[in-house]
Length: 220
Image (cartoon, rainbow, N blue to C red; front, side):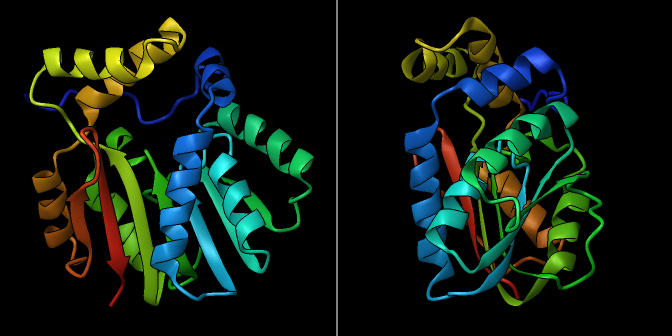
């Protein structure tokens, strides 16, 4: 099935609110545990969260690593409004910097980050080479990468089955968003080719569930 791109920015307030209110605690905690495993013994770090959404993952990382400073980026003002409220309620405003920016062209200097992570941003991005080149620019030598995203199913029918299996109890708005995201996702082989084109050949790509792929490794 050919990829069917969806909008890069979740800037419709109703969609942002539905996403912020959804219960992703289990999957977000699993993401954080894998990130910390990949990051190893780094007790201090400058970390970058791309596509932070409501900042739940950034908050979980900040709590788990009290000496990490995190820049949490999103291109949606509506989503960052939810993130700001959550970060303030968590008492982490001094350690989590929220930044309105395009992940393909961030305002940060080169080689600024020890850890770069993202959950579910890649399927939103169509100009993927710009995205990966920006990540390469931002990474310090030896920086840890961890990105998790959806993998595109073989057919629309398969995508509908995934939505029914994993999101049937979610609001209809979120179910349709999930379906569109599955159609907009990349396959592992497509991601491997993207990494080869942009010189991130030290990173690995692996299917980790029936609907998710991981990109992970260290920068040169």
